[in-house]
Image (cartoon, rainbow, N blue to C red; front, side, top):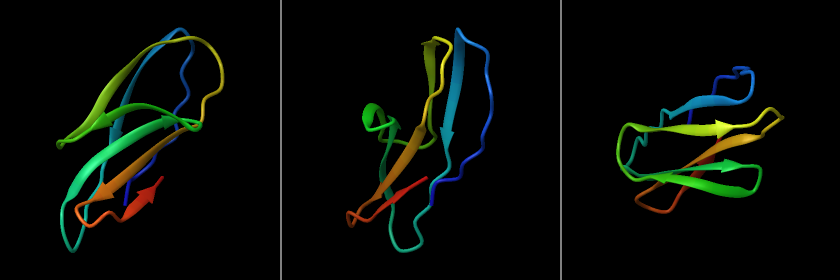
Amino acid sequence: MPKREITSYVGPATIPLIAEATDEDGIIKKVQFYNGTTLFATQNYFPYSLTWYPIPAGNYAITAKAIDDKGAVTTS
């Protein structure tokens, strides 16, 4: 299950995004990062991280969706 931590930044900003995902009965195939409903990045390998930039001032709803080798999905 992806872990989440809430942090505030002042825009424009460079924001590191890191998803910690594990699967007890298989492997994580990919982690997808969304701003609202818009997919903006997919990480296929551990560590599931990226640097998101440049980000203007504003409010964003960032989620990470972990998908395992059996197609199960967990969203943070």
